[in-house]
Image (cartoon, rainbow, N blue to C red; front, side, top):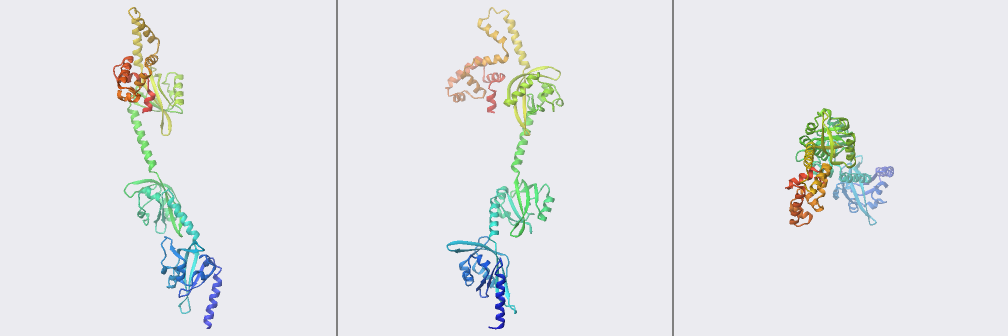
Length: 497
């Protein structure tokens, strides 16, 4: 053996001793693709303990180990790293998944591989080297991130900072915007601007260029079919495959905007109805009875200017005659949330007293509970009733021609209040006749009442005629007015509404 060959063998053995203890795997290959030697780390990365178990050459290695790229595509036999380095190719950072079967069990690793070609003094290839690092844990972590990213319902995209192009997008973003995956991947942040009309876009762009965290801010995200979507966007830097990236995450504000628009429209409709209704109406806060708003009809009826009402409490204004009556009204509202047909005396500006029937309910205005009070002036009606009683008294001074029964009824009318007379008239009806009157007030026809009460149509007509007779009315509308003037069936009407 020549001196040069001996020197080469000596140098090779010394090199093998140096690299045998390295954590990176090293495989030495002859120019003819014969696998010459591998250190312990390289053997462990293949699940074997001896270099012969790798295969004698590149062909046997390919029979024992199946290689796939990270996109799950198989590596062709002539593209195995051993074949590529044997063809004189040098490469770095080739990532492959290595699979084999050992003792009936499938094993797999992920290798990150680079190559070296050692030459002799003449520059001819002498030995080929593959340097392997175990990237199994890294690939597993990346796979977990990929699954988590795709499964996360929060919309998100990932932008590569080197060229500001999107490299990943999850299903949440596609569903929120309507974009297809191919419409996002590969596009730049200038083509698909996720920071458009952002509250602080200059800061966001500065942080993006620095690769720093982008705080949450409101923005308008353009949609593929036109229009935009209101979102909250934030950016978080991260590293993917040793590349600096930015993760943009989003929160869809469109449902909230729609709710706000609907709420604003509802409040506008309420305000318009409130102003235009001819019935005196007032709104006050539930906690302190502070007057929030009054309509024109209330101002006309009470005689107060709005500046003397708004911002003051109901008790401070004193338009409800009697502190006890005022306290009773709001105690009933606090307990039941609503009142109906409560008779009160209301003091107009200038001290004039009028009789009113008050109905009230609880409403929510700008997230605060308020009371909506509706007043009906019954002063004229009560005056008419008193005049009628006075006329009856005048006539009764000579009642010799009255029947005893009529005299008793007139005496009873005189001695009872209007509300008591209304109650006595209602109690003259039988339970079935009350049912019929209630359904008339709901607007049901005879056939519908018959179906509801499971009665024959003729029976219902008889009941209706009896109700008309007892109430001294001649039509459905008069019967309804009669019932509403006495506050009957108010609860049923509210529930139907």
